[in-house]
Amino acid sequence: MWKNRLLASTGKFKHPAWGVSHSQRIYELSLQLAAEQGVDVDQDALLAAAYLHDMGAFEPYKQPGVDHAERSVQVAEGILNSIGFPPDRTPLVKDIIRGHMFYADPAPQIEAVIFHDADVLDFMGAIGVARLLSIVGLDDWTPDLKSAIELIQRFSQELPGKLHTPQARQMGKVRHAEMDAFLTSLSDETSNFNVL
Image (tube, rainbow, N blue to C red; front, side, top):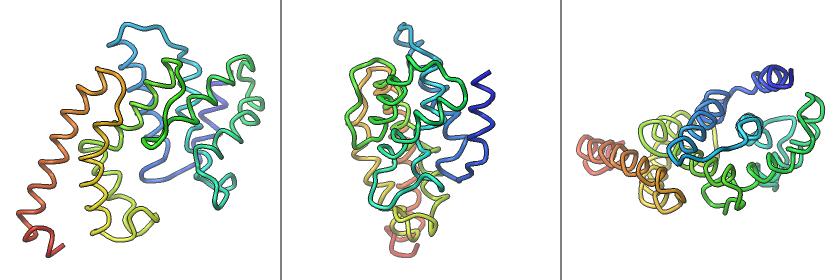
């Protein structure tokens, strides 16, 4: 079955912030958002998108100068074909992947909108803080601890405004408060971030 082949083929991509656990969280959160909205969604397309949306950030797919979301779209069809995914649903998977990042506009399909919101939410709250701290020194986004804290501050302010659905915005309020509580405590313990 294609689902088993998908999970087997993507399980090798290990990363502290963009690995398989991120994919699983995004899929489950997308289903939760759909259920809270009372909408039917293509769960297979969401599952495929969840495990392929960051492939363009990993070798051998990564290409310098190409946004990882667009690169993931470029490689998704070949991967989906190789595992026997229904080809008539591949365009939806590609649309979901293309607009998943916080700086992108999702396609109009409900699957794309809730997936975008789920990905944004995974950059927020305790999990968002943990993910960004886990890549200090490993990624251009966070070459050192100071840059990671600055990114957490920026995301705390900007990401709530990137959420589209009322359900995601409600979750975003809780996660925003978690980030602010972390930043307030860290500021208190480091003389306003001067002794990081």
